[in-house]
Amino acid sequence: SPLHDFLHGLPKCEHHVHLEGCLTPELIFHLASRNDIALPNPADNPAYASIAALTARYEHFTSLDDFLAFYFEGMAVLRTEQDFTDLAWSYFQKAHADGVHHAEVFFDPQVHQSRGVAYATIVDGFSAGCKRAETELGLSTRLILCFVRHLPVSSAKEVYEEFLAHKHFESGVVHGLGWSSTEVGPPKDMFRELYASAAQKGVPLTAHAGEEGDPTYISTALELGATRIDHGIRLVEDPELMQRVAREGILLTVCPLSNVRLRCVKSVEEVPIRKFLEAGVKFSINSDDPAYFGGYILDNYCAVQEAHQLSILEWRIIAENSVQQSWIPDERKAELL
Ligand code: ADE
Ligand code: ZN
Image (cartoon, rainbow, N blue to C red):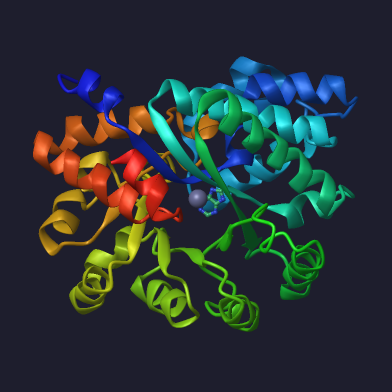
């Protein structure tokens, strides 16, 4: 796009990227071999015949759940602390090259724990990748632990107990909590108790809502204490709720290429960027699962520009909002503005 160089140079913050969603087909095959882990048999699932076949399969997701099956299968190659560090470091290098100065990144510990990986292995591995990004790239980082909606609440409770026992919030190793995975189906408020406990301790809370689910998923997340909404594109269907979100300065972390790949919208034109701008809803533009959706953050910025033809001023507003709504101290905000 004509604004490509401008968008590349614009200091960006990323607020919605799953580190496990940065696991490329290349890295899946590499780590499967390094850890001697068998990938699904291509006789059962031809997508695993080769790196090229897997890459091609990712172009035809039919829904969030269709994607999630591959996402959970792929992350099974992560075993050692080094695997988690390597994965995080590969993302931060790419983000740095795209002009990201600050990144708030998700991870799903329950899914690794259910395969026998210890909580400390996961967090220490990812945290080492974050540290390296801070020292070698000058990129500030925040780890956000996500509870997953497809496993029982008891499993989320166990990981929350570990998070508390390790004092990971107090020590700044894990900065906030979120929820992710399948949206429509499990109870909307399944994490009510956990969010109440975390909110009481001052832990910043976000939640995936309004991606496939209707606006009541968003209002429920806000009721439970989320101060940020991941995706949230279906907010446009409830003008009253949209006004409240604008008034309260709640950030939506929008992921345009993800929305297209998971068929939440037909094209990036359908992502309600202009409606959010007109309503004064703050949002950032993010990659979600870049290894699966065909683009990192700059690709998402460029796709939005192609589809919506924003002005330089509008882009400056988006970039400034994404700094202001980051979970960082004012001194760091001042450096980023
Ligand atoms: N986990 C990884 N990507 C996700 C998405 N787009 N929605 C819900 N959960 C996810
Ligand atoms: Zn996501």
